[in-house]
Length: 282
Image (cartoon, rainbow, N blue to C red; front, side, top):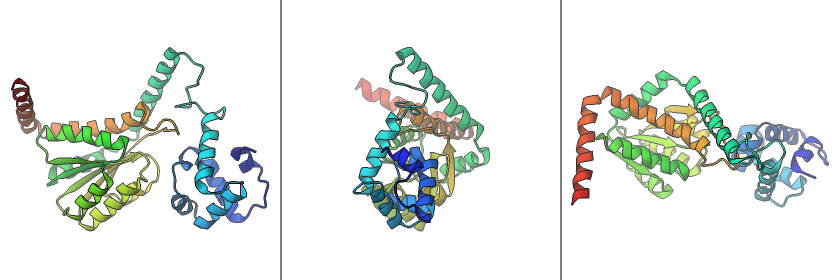
């Protein structure tokens, strides 16, 4: 029997805690497969042991095998597309391109509608007041962090992008109150990033996080959080509809910095460009 069907019609005696977990899974199907047992237990208000017992009642040896099977079931169920809910395997290339475009536009519009200008202002000021700006992300978010680092360093800001977990922790241990971290994570639950932020906060570092909308650990422990709309599905990780909102938010920060420091930024941008041109000629 499929997992979704078992959740609707359990073949075992359902305890009160089981009922809470079943309700949690139903409401968080897409995000559930990306979460750890500890995250699920904390968010649903039950014990970790309850989660472990529950998956065994469903016939699985461990939580990981349950998640893999559940992810496969979600990706092939009739209500799900292969990358986005609007996309199916048998549609034409043109239809797929059109659906991706509309999905991306929808995500950006929702992000724009929910934009908090006061939070954006705090973010810009924190970056301009910072001694050094550390831009951090793991995986695809690390690529986005590197891109933003290049933007800021070419207008003269003292920045460093970091995508290695060990390096993040080492740097956090020697940071100070004048430093700023920009932490990028779609889920807001990346373990290495959260550990780094917790350590950096103890050092008095200002924490800016950029995450998808909704409650998450990184958002809760940050001083400033910029959130964007996300419809990321299991196969959408790293796709244009999950990366574009991150890029949009960072480009907005960059533009606001340019607006406030126009003459200085222009001068530095020309200097860095000239340096690259001279290097190419040599």
